Length: 607
Ligand code: F6R
Image (cartoon, rainbow, N blue to C red; front, side, top):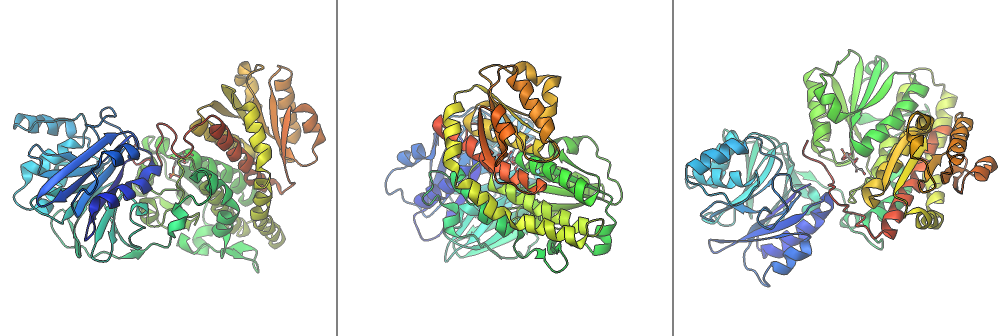
């Protein structure tokens, strides 16, 4: 989604803004712009399309040491140069960038037009520039506070005024804003990736707060001008983690990082002596953990699929009713919060609006909501009542890969903890830990055979439609495989329970529609084989993800990729790797923009 960067300091602002925007590209965008201030004059340059178009439009040596930049993911108004940010008031003295959606912009626009303000764009954001102008009495920070008191909706805003040089002001309500404290320079960004090349010292701005920065100073206040003392956090990410290195794209890098990211998710959290897990961040006593009677996993997209997989594990091993639910649905169906139930909000970014609002609604009803997040300091991580960081490192590609397997790892640890307080014996716990610790080597051995998956992708990538089929704990893996394929290759793919195809989707089977079956050697293997035969009988091409040495499956399927034999609960990890690779190689073969697929955004901060 949209990205924000702001700079004031001793260096020319334009290259820093463009570089910051490049680091935010991964969020998905369709246009970009910057505003640079110099000698009391603001220069705005904005362009539809990718950043190289903006870069080319910026005059060499553009002077100015303070400015703001934005990548836009259109919500109100078409994608064109005019609708791109920054927006200015009609005098051209104020410029703003905005993330989020202003819900009362229609009424405000009408009122301001009535007062004589001329609007140039179709965006909701432009209203902020005119409102600031109408409320300006010589102090931009105060004008922003008055503006925020009138705005309804979500925003991360950064603004500048030509008469107040070397100063930026920002405000937040529901859309992230981070301050970076450098040496004689300050930066503002919608996430830390925009700042990390310049500083590791950051301050997270909260909803209802306003920040004013000059090169050597910052101050945070609330809308009533009361001073707020903020904690300075240190970012632990390394710059290389947000760079591609020798990989062709971030998605490839992130797929191949999984043995390490999975290891990081369980490192230091396993108690071998007692065959259980340590998850200090949960903020729950053993007594409270024991009293849990129901678990709900709330999330969107890939994170929801991780929740679905884990719900099978939780019910089987801990014998606690557990289900995953789409955050966007939960929020609006007046959820019933039962006593002794616990909720998890699962989110890689920790900023997904659907998940965040579901968390708030649940907390409002008195629920205890724990977070499973990747991004440290993200809103969900901060607002949840405790939780577990998955420590995947930054996930830059829009399509989530390593976060999925790390979310699973965190939820598997939580299941171990809860199960060991109930029916699971020390010996079973010990075997579960052994299985968990085998995952990095297992996934590594599968990744080393990437060329086999690449050959399959080459053979099948011209298909228009795909079915992804699995059962039991591997049913959500099929859903995730289909999601990966459609989002980055644009091939239509449906994920289904293999058992369900006879209830409808089998009508789609023909010689041009491949079905990809997940067939581990678990208790459902025979059933899945029957489903494969049903597809073969209708001349549908069949690709099987099976287990080494499964000759029966090999005899039925047209193509097989086999994974090493593993514990039944470990197959979701083993099967996910070839599915991610398959989607990736199909997209590559079709010449797609793998890291920034069309219409998609990382970190979906609007509902
Ligand atoms: C798919 C994908 C999305 C996200 C979803 C939730 O590859 O990345 O489906 O999983 O938008 O995002 P987070 O986990 O950041 O809440």
